[in-house]
Image (cartoon, rainbow, N blue to C red; front, top):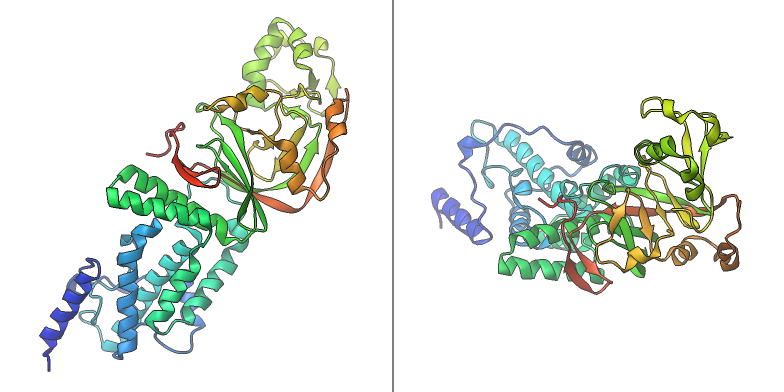
Length: 436
């Protein structure tokens, strides 16, 4: 009924009507791709040959549906469709110029699989380019399992409806995630580029956090200066926090809370010790009594500060450590939540409660002060804390370490768009000027 040229023109017009993906002429197709490990594993384990390429209408429909999904869905999911479309064959239907039919079909099948796996991976756990975290102790423990999970899911796809079901399955269905998606749709309609970018990054962060399916986890949003505690993806506890000053930013990372320490010492970081406390010691060591600071030598032994010739101590030869005694006037208060990260940063109580009333709560040296430490500890530990013990403020009380059984994941992120108090989308000031 139709000639080859007419058929080709018809397919191009059809594809354009599905979202604007215009294939480059076949003579410009790039050479055989360097396959990522994920694609290699997919074909290594596959016994059924090609998944995308073939003359039958079902495989042609599968190719068309992938392109259609990328064009129609990505923007509303906070993803950049060009990241995946550029991986497809430049001629989205035919053969690569100058190659045999079989070779071209193999290369093109690889390209479709590469694009599909990249998209499904970002849909499942968020685009890592938007994550912007430093150390991530969580993802590396599940990386291999995540890869095999996606490979096995894609291996079951044989028709367009299967692909639809898979895409719908991978996105979270929580109320907070849906609120963010609806907010993104509204901003796409209005064309607010800044808010679109902010919401897109937050959606990717939420997909990352939810894909682990942790029974418990903590999220600190530095930009909002808030902490949320979740169980089974449901918000159980919300509180204000005090985060790092713009000059001493709280780092972004993912780690585990493995201990709750009652009556903690504050081991003063060296930068604070030499820049803020040492200059006072050179003038008068009485400041150490006021701050209830102990001085420890290089062997960890407490020494008399009056036995030290402070005039000869410099930033370069400083070999001591300052440690604040335990109690309610300790900078960490009476509760510290230890985190397994390479940074000297943790969550803790504070002796400066008034700061939580401020709307701008960026005052610390990098650690995160929490408004409701007792409530948080009660959720993390198997038994509730003894309030009378914490209120006693016993002088000289040694730290008491309580293990968090099944360490609880902690995400410390910077999201300038987020859900406020569990029910509404709010935009926050870019206090660290990171959202550029």
